[in-house]
Image 1 (tube, helix red, strand yellow):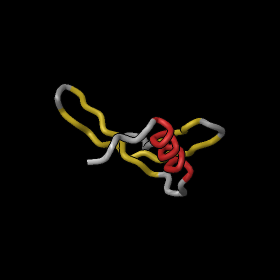
Image 2 (cartoon, one colour; image 1 turned 180 degrees about the vertical axis):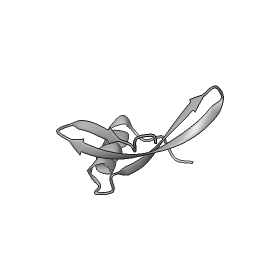
Image 3 (cartoon, one colour; image 1 turned 90 degrees about the horizontal axis):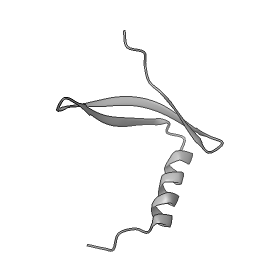
Length: 57
């Protein structure tokens, strides 16, 4: 197993992911011992992450 990535390598990888045209991701949450996956769309704009998800019916 190799050495852990440096902070700069992890930051660069995260920024590269944000620059990709694929604007979908999944966020995992837990509540009272139950896990949930929530699909989100995101946009990286002027150094900020904007997240959006469907409104609950």
